[in-house]
Image (cartoon, rainbow, N blue to C red; front, top):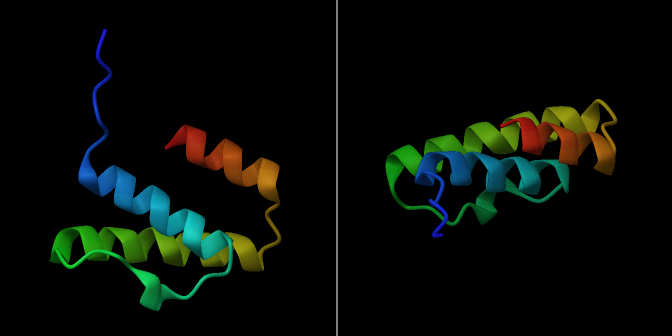
Amino acid sequence: MKTQKRSQTTRAFSKGYQAGIDGRSRSLCPHENELARQTWLSGWREGRTDHWDGFNRAAKAQKLSNM
């Protein structure tokens, strides 16, 4: 059975969150589409906040699985 792909915005948020929590720069955003770019940056901001608040890898995995 085929699996359905996640929406572009959900994937953009998730990838942005991962980049943010890993401490990468927001200038690494791969999207040129305005909606996807804004969503990626929202994920990045949330990831940076969690990084600064001291979330560890286990908390990151849990948060991403809940999205």
